[in-house]
Image (cartoon, rainbow, N blue to C red; front, top):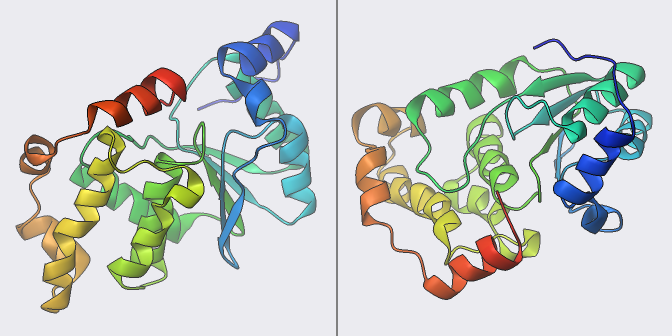
Amino acid sequence: MTHPPFTGLTDWAELMLRDHGVLRLAWHNLHQIDAQMWRSNQPTPGRVEQAAKAGIKTIINLRGPRSDGGWKLEAEACKKANITLIDFTARSRAAPDKEMLYGARDLFNSIEKPALMHCKSGADRAGLMAALYVLIYCEKPVAEAMKQLSLRYLHVRQAKTGMLDSFFEAYAPYEAQGMAFFDWVDTIYDPQALHDAFMARPWAEKLVDGILRRE
């Protein structure tokens, strides 16, 4: 996608107010996964500049292609800082589809690193992709990967976002039997069955969707 150079006051208003960016001015939910990958919430242009100074070469926007002010500001800041911006769609309230899982693997293998992944809050989609990065790219056990889905990052597994935890838990017994992750994805994993079996807690839904206003 082409990243246009236009920004203005309307873009900043959208980022700060409509996208709740004012709540992220002091809280960045920024964490290092390994020497080559970081995760965070939606960065401001100033944080993009800081990322460039820290050596970040690629920023992965897990919110997918957008046209709002926050995206325009991020795109312009990345262009100015000579950082590659990649739009990749991850979902926080659905069982990951197989196309997305293979896309994540290709992404991790192809991007220039060090890199930073972000969603809106840095809790759920960033957690999913961070866990996949640990499992697929770093080749760590699924138990290690699941540490990226934690209350430490404000991930709430009792809400619909807990479907992400269930996804990795579904693979765990097959990993214990020696089955490779993508062999499990190809032959065993059923996204619809996982979706149908998951039950969220009403209080957690009110917290995540009503109070925290997560995407």
